[in-house]
Image (tube, rainbow, N blue to C red; front, side):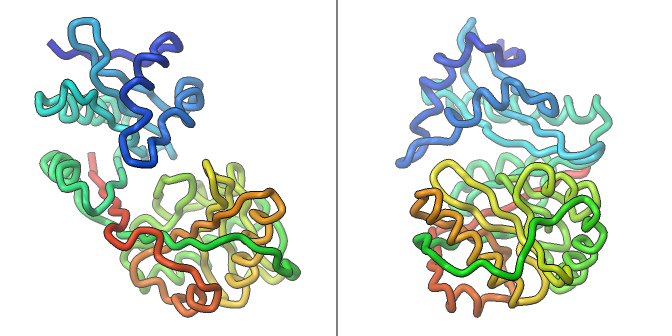
Length: 282
């Protein structure tokens, strides 16, 4: 009989034995295991069958009403027996008991099995995002500054205005660290506290930059195109100075600033899939 428990430090070796090579390039679980284990705003769950760990998943609590579901992995020897469904159901019940009203997750467009699973549990597609990349380089970075808490309302107003014309941004326009969230003061504050949020002196636009596993990631780009260009240049230059060769840009489907991608010679990272964000009202 399947049961669930919280992951413990001593589970690391067993879990990484089946979560380190999920795809051709590997998996991100080894990079986030310790963070999830110590995550004060999350639950790291394991599925157990006959004293063996057969699956894992993680819940990140983004606000008092929103949660992010991620890292659902099933041991290859125990697939097709309902482990994934069990972990999803446990996560949703956990959220319900904690009074969380909205659950979201992201699935690549080619992963039909996972899409089918979440749809069966009432999740609906609310956003589609693409990844573009290029090599970092030494560029001029004048004209921008680091945003702070005093800028939150200005940044939110800029984002909400642009989101009126993009369905993905309207639902889940606040993104960083592979988590999508509804645009709100809490979401903007969370980005400022957890990443490098850049704006200009007149606050006409903004964007988020963070150092990922092996690249510099730029996302949540809003506002004046010239400010966006300066933020992208800053990200490319930052990666170059840090010795990171790759820069990744995450944008919504239908992004109105696509000309900027061409000007900076960004190429689509994955031609065969996009990132689909699903949402369930609990």
